[in-house]
Image (cartoon, rainbow, N blue to C red; front, side, top):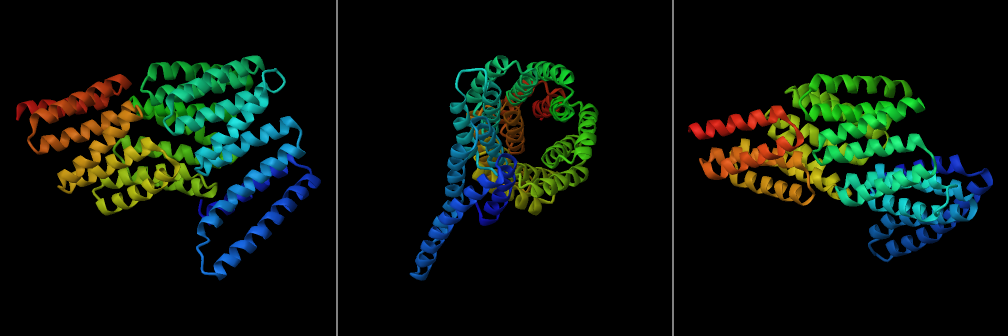
Length: 416
């Protein structure tokens, strides 16, 4: 974490502590932190005076403080409050891009729940959050296992709203796996459960997920309708993180519709909101969206600049599929500039990562771009193989429009 990131996370942790701690407990926690800070700052200062490099020590201090805060909370708070604090702290770390720390806090909360009914709802929340963290990192099997366990916890707690959230996340899981039929089935089940609980915020988030499915399927106007319904709610409630996600999704739909200028406006709005809450993974996705849009506008310099900005973030947060997507965009730019060998290297790396982390949509797109390279080189056999693989994966996810585009390239190849 950079010093700026540390400061932002610290501010959010302070707000979270104020939610759970009395004034006396807060005073005790911050008193202990200040003692640690003063002691170690003095050590760092003395190292600086001796000409040493204190950069590593400074970066490590934030995690040390956080660990001490958690220890103090375990000592000072009732068990339920402490476990809920851990789950919310995990969410802060997730948005800050520290997936490993977020996963650790979720695991700590799960371990503290036990097997009874009294804390089962918190166990479900912690498992749900850990599943989300796994989904972000393309850890598909652990995510699915956590969602199955999560369902057991929410059943034990008789929490129908929690079960709705499980189906919501299962919908996201199957979107990522390219199984849109099962994704919609789970999202509809979640919708029915949310309707019973009258939870407008979660229902609005569900509209975003249904919009993603519609966008992948090429039903862009339907996707925009879902997003607009969600947008109205998020603007009314001031849900900044959700607004960041929504404007990114709107940008992706405008990209699909062939309107890169409108897409850039949406990605800029996403960046504005993501920056406000320091939602770093989403900042990366919006940078990548802008890179794709500028590539379509043939502004290759800006495309590479934003792709590299995105890559720096994705490497930091270990978002392997987004790294693969960044290489795909860089490959497209290099191909359009006539650097076919460089383009092929980027796209082959994108294919490798997408195969390792099982992303059928990204595989379909990367194989299509590879096919265009081979077609441009008049390597008909390689081009045919890449286009056929692209069609196979687009068919798997039900992307009809994209299949038609690939088939048109394949037909043109056969005629030449």
